[in-house]
Length: 350
Ligand SMILES: Cc1ncc(COP(=O)(O)O)c(C=O)c1O
Image (cartoon, rainbow, N blue to C red):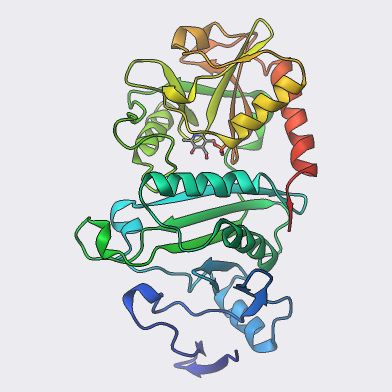
């Protein structure tokens, strides 16, 4: 594919073949140079032509974003305003990390994406293998060795009514970038968190196990935490038991054993949570998943949060109560170390 640059009104512009004219076809989005990746994913090749390099420079970015099988520059990566992902938060997503040239727990993330989609009757238009291939291709295209990948499937373009039957084609979007969820100093000192009034969604409403594009429940809790001057919130379920935080699962250590709320309390089936449980068991720690109350948190010896974005974050104060001796605990530190060792060595090669 060749791109022609010309100047109009003193501004550099790029003329490209008319890619998709309909609403749902990313009418304005212009694919960058395409090559074939194994598995049939069309991607950006290692060699950019001079024209394409100038094009990328004129965009002020080299980021390449995957939308429905093609890569677009950051400026041109657009979806329709009629996409129900935007209109109703109708869709699912995953946040994935790459470490040391490997995508960590890729299969687990892709599996969870498909479980979430199944729960909301959303048919993902690519197979799990194709999705995995596209994630790897996105990392390669953006030269990501250590980074964060956002994988999104929207319901697609439909009418203004909320019924998904008008959405004929779900869209798959992949952004391979970087993330720093919390300030680095908090990983050293530990974090203070608070319990917030907004409770976790009921299982009988949108099940909290569904990682949907509708994160308002968590966003409200996050705002409440920020209003209280802290970075993260403990969310209780409607019965008053601890569920999780807005973007992380929660663990406590008591008398040398690890405890975390059961998934039935309203926690996401966290992939980091599961990894930490396995690391703890390998280290000979007892792990259990009982219902936990705020009282249990206040009287824990240690507390920490887990998440793909957050990784492992020590917690030192909850609702004004110091946890343990008010410093990150030794078991937390050991698990953190084991987690970092694992992330550097395991995963799908990019
Ligand atoms: C609400 C919520 N809980 C927990 C987590 C942690 O899950 P994971 O370890 O799979 O990233 C996340 C992040 O994905 C989340 O959004």
